[in-house]
Image 1 (cartoon, rainbow, N blue to C red):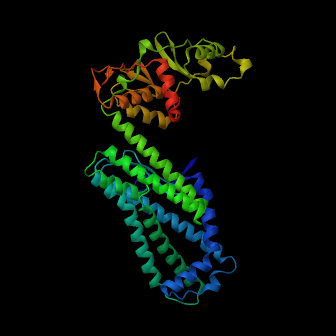
Image 2: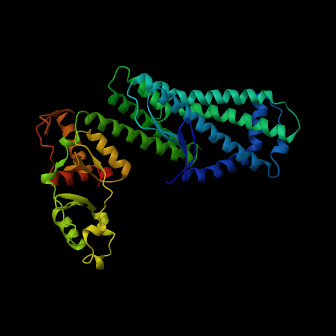
Image 3: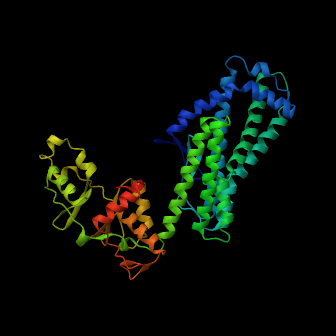
Length: 414
């Protein structure tokens, strides 16, 4: 979804996801529609003495709903700032804080693998929410009870934020990895286990929690919103476990150990017609080629580029007219996991491998997935001999290997 930057705090960009603009009015409407019930609850539990009738009539409930919804999301930002500032204290940069459909996300450039650091970072957000609840509750009692609509409105908003911040803290501490509680669980598990194994256990607990939450949403009256949250938790737990497993598997594996060397990369001429290019792709079972002229790489052309040309015009268009010239490259000595991350960030399926401004190879997602399969089968994650994996299988991969890897993991298909 598209994101809009609305400001920054402590040098961290604050962004709004498009889904947030959809959910904010919904939250405002839900809060406004339940102002009367919320006031009655506060009066019953806290003896607040807030007049119900003035706050639940006319346009005031909807104004209170808007104010409470905005206040709630401000508290979410502060919650995420708690995570972010703690992470920055440990030397982990924060790319952004984003408000979206299910609340807020602090985007760390790198996750800590020291269990104490992760524990402190994970706890920081809920502790901020508890502190905000305490401040709101204190303000709630400091505001005098009276018949004034203005005073009653302020008292209601402070009481509502006190309740919601407690709910936010408690819900985030549920063991639904990758929520805060799940990260606390992983940190505690990682005290005496390998990080990858701790992640796998926390992810399984998170997926179980997600299933229970989804069932409650479907059959326990929790509603479809809880089902959506459960789905998000399940996908997040699975993704985190997969990425951590891959990171552990690629430990010590460099790009040069997985890439196809330049002398084995098939390139195409910039003057080749798009029709001939598509015939070549069909014949060779490849969906992307470097475009080379006079030993200089000019760009990359993919099946997607070729498809953008109408069939009747493919004989007239040259490859150089449809190729991508904004090339993303990587050094052969960088880690294989870095290559995969860079592909995901740029939503591409291959990287040019450059060393001293010279084209030395090509690495694709299929190369990485095949290498991962070999590493898993070998039961080791080290590189032996520089050019082969630990079981002696060459890391320069064949077309058949690429196709098999693509079938094994469609999520990383080129």
